[in-house]
Image 1 (tube, one colour):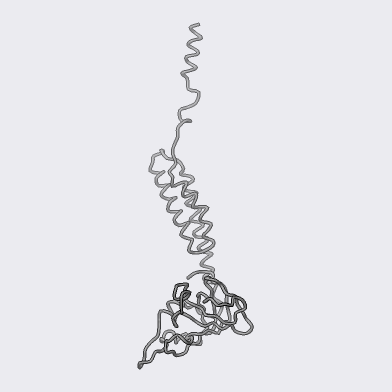
Image 2 (cartoon, one colour):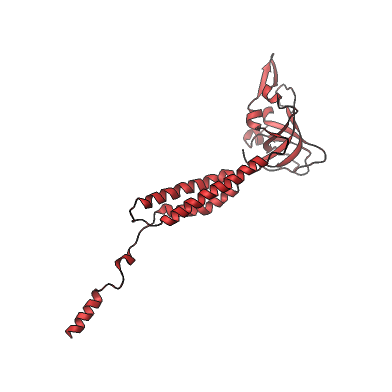
Length: 237
């Protein structure tokens, strides 16, 4: 009987599993957050502005891995943190290269890229001899083949447009009232080409810019373009 009691006592006191198999190491919350950013980073394929998503996610994954590496084994999830970090860095570089290619290839051959805002709108007019005239920098663009981007001013007609006004932005100056003369260009499609109105979507146009003196009263378009190319812009800048 004594032997049976000793056997039962040993059986109860003897651990069935090793103590290490019951050890629990917590995972930093940033690991889960960085994994979520991996999926969100796929949105960056839609716009170069969204490249900030994988960049932020990579920073969070790095911080998570740093916390784990400094914990001396008390925290888990190092492998997931590294996976998230590498994946988002690759996505940032891959999608970034794709958007750079779009930027480089959106200008038609034979045309020079011009910024509507910086190279035309912000130049304003120049007063010479008491008369308002075209700024010299803008005058240099006259009769030159250029490519620029802007937003279509809304008309009643939305389809089959032979001409339309292109504005520099979607601000209240463009869609809440009369744009300033330097903020708009009258686009005339060349030949039989016609276009449809793009609602608040950045578009690119290429053609020959025409300029004419103005009294800055806004009654007549100061800038016009004989447009041979029209397409939604591939990039926002």
